[in-house]
Length: 126
Image (cartoon, rainbow, N blue to C red; front, side, top):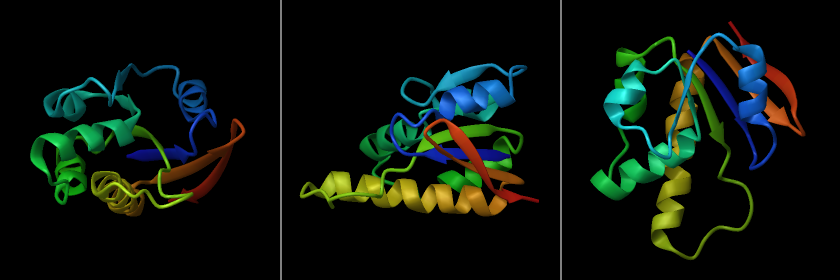
């Protein structure tokens, strides 16, 4: 598993596609859990978490389930925990869920890259 993270519009997907031209990508905005389990790469993973929270209200086991189902996945996600804390309770829960899920995935991933201004900085390479 590999995790590529960064702020909004920092070039994570372009970086991921450059490093992995051989894989096909699904969008976290539109894919189902079953598609995610079969995917080679997923972009906008933070949006997948948001949709799961809206549907189920819980993402506490998402990282473990994903690791068990698709350990070779390349995940591209925005970091959503920076900036002003939202007033809206759902938006706060969403930010927390993205942080918790990505933290678990990063711990398991063999490689974690943070992208800033289109430049990838490898922060873990096991």
